[in-house]
Length: 252
Image 1 (cartoon, one colour):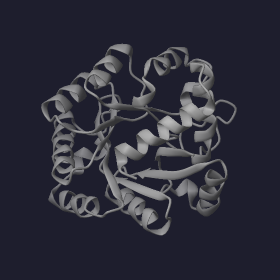
Image 2 (cartoon, one colour):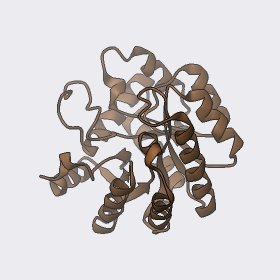
Image 3 (cartoon, helix red, strand yellow):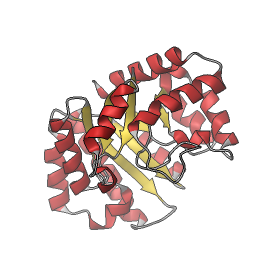
Image 4 (cartoon, helix red, strand yellow):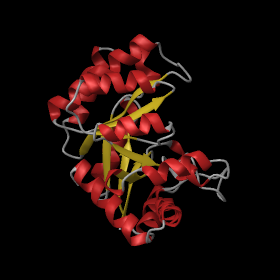
């Protein structure tokens, strides 16, 4: 039994065959799929999917790319979405200084608001951080205690050590299978199994051998098999522990 803790089934890439994608995942042992919003519209679609499909859950939030357009209307909208019982968390939220689609001040203001919302509703947060690790850590430290999952981990050892010291969780995607991802694979080996979760970030980051094609939640199985191999564990050990981590974290 597996859980894809981060995908985007609401994206138009899945419009032609969304039912089949969910069924293929089920056939591969993916019992639950957590669909993560990136803006108000995406979060609304994510929640709609979770209400339609019993095994799909939603996380709602506004990505830092959209921080410049954040206003009172967006604030009210994300609050209403987050109050639904099938919204299991706030995300993906955080900071992105790589593309800088929004100003840093706007990103920080949005980040702080969404963390305060998560704390108010007693929900965990799913973090996106890119080229912003120090500011991300500073904000999270200042707002402790809070349940945190750092999604699509792609940072270095120093950031990982601090994340683990703070009691946060870490998830990895199928990019750890890429031929040039040696450093990332070494990072995967260092994460305690009780802090690890699996995700596809579908439709992005298809595993090696499928690059250039749409990723799907069913590839969580391949990811679990790959992690088991590089860590010298059994598939059942990785699948069982990461599934329990996700259940406990999101309250499934």
